[in-house]
Length: 243
Image (tube, rainbow, N blue to C red; front, side, top):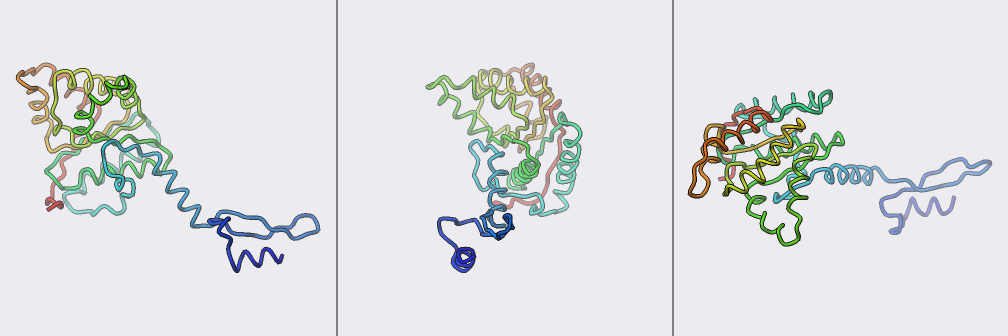
């Protein structure tokens, strides 16, 4: 009992994050340690954040919660669709994703971060990647022969969010053998897939067709068909909040 009182009055640094509690042990009153409320909260937050795998995006996005997203009139439609997806995902693990399109700085990435956090809160792993940086860094994987593994991890991940698609600089190879392969596998397996972009579907089709010095409308439309199959286009309006 003396040790218990001492620990209550002067918590040990060795047991930081834990608190003593009393319990009956036969004919004796004994004490043990349990995690404090704050430690349980911190451990839960760490668990959730570890389910969100960011690729070339700031770590701060792991802290975004949907409840903190400003519900401006221009965002209501997108937020409603995000809420509907989360509800539907409870009963259908192959629910169709969303394609948020709109101008710079209107909150598309922020809302997707809220979605990622909401899904992770329910124990789901989410890959959230910045497409332009991912495409630009593909050559780095040639050095250690890890490209195929990287592509397949994204292609087969439970849930993927492709941020800022349409802002990347593509070659025929990165369009057809990387993006095309990833999206084809995700479409075949009906895996929930999300996108943010400054381009609508029509503009993105032109972007995919114009690669370097060539123009291939057929391959562009083929890639767009996968995106249309995987996601529902939702416009996000509003002012640029980055200014």
